[in-house]
Amino acid sequence: MSDAARLARIAYLQKPPGTPYARFPLNQPHYNAVEANRRDAIVGAAFSATASYVEALSGIKSAATSWAIIKLYYSSFYSVRALLLCRGVVPFSSGGEMMLDLERRIFLKGGNSSHSWNWDSIRKTSAKDEWFSSQDSQDAYGALRALRENVNYTHSFPDPVSHRCLAGAVSELEKRFRYYRDDVDFIYTYLDDHLALSYPTKILFEVDRVIRGLGVKLSPEQSDHLVGMWKFKDRCPMVI
Image 1: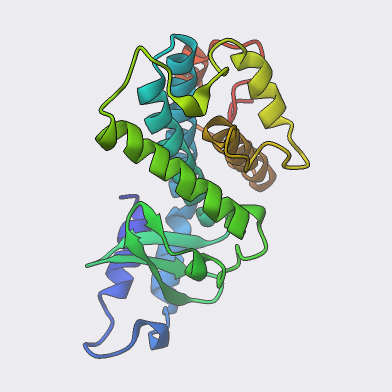
Image 2 (image 1 turned 90 degrees about the vertical axis):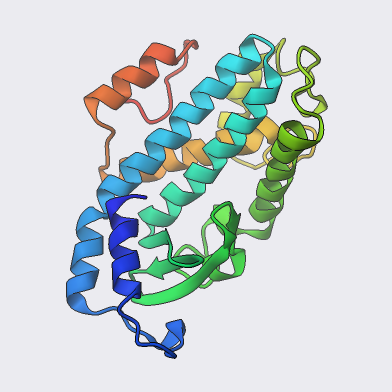
């Protein structure tokens, strides 16, 4: 849990018993404490999203697609978290999953679990107009999560047979990476035959774009770590 999430949880625990969370406003000292740590939380989530993605591509490159699917899911999970934090929305756990919307200074239901976002709540925050909070994005994220569970629990790692959702990706990975990264019209992003790689790629480069606009950077150590794992000629996401 990031310090921003921990401080949001502390603020939430000040709620008097019986008071609905929607009617419990965030006071100024708690707002200041969470906001002061939000940038570090963005960096942490962005780094986790990128590291998971880079590890996934390495797996695909070596035909280890089962772990790659799991890593692609986790990359998307952390990308959503990073984008929420960029918009001032802090996910945290406190006897359940919650969100703190710093702009409106209100608490919202976060989801049924840490990996099951409450998209209705997201669409009530300042992130409501972002493409990643759309129904298309929600559906793609849900499909990717189902693929992760299919590999992890149902089929128990079918390697060396490549999973159907990554058919063709092993042999043309660099080309697909560029297609998905540059998919400005969202042609591939949500398609069933592509989303296992296209959605994580698109949302990660959205994080890259947004944090650059905010002037947020990874630490030199984090950047060096990612570059050391990156096996493509193209620029590694999140690294200047």
